[in-house]
Image (cartoon, rainbow, N blue to C red; front, side):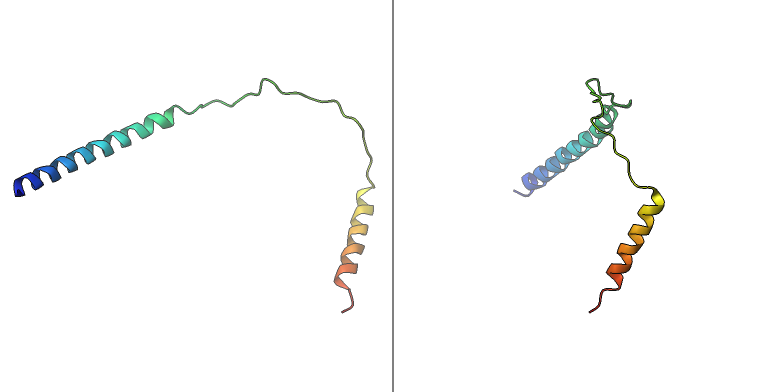
Length: 77
C-alpha cells in the first residue's frame, strides 16, 4: 500500500510539473501574437460643422471667474 501511494504521488508531481512547464512555455508565444503596428480605422467619418460660436475674450472670462470665486468664499454664515 505504501509503494502505491508513493508511486501515485511521484506520478502526480511529474504530471503537474509537465503541465506547469507547458503553460510557461505557451505564455511567450501568446504574447508574440499581439499586433505590433498601429490600428488604422478604415471606416472613419468626418462630419461638417453645423455652427460656429464666438466666446468672450479671455480677460473678461478671467475677471468673471474671479468675481464668482470671491462671492463663494465671502458668503456670510
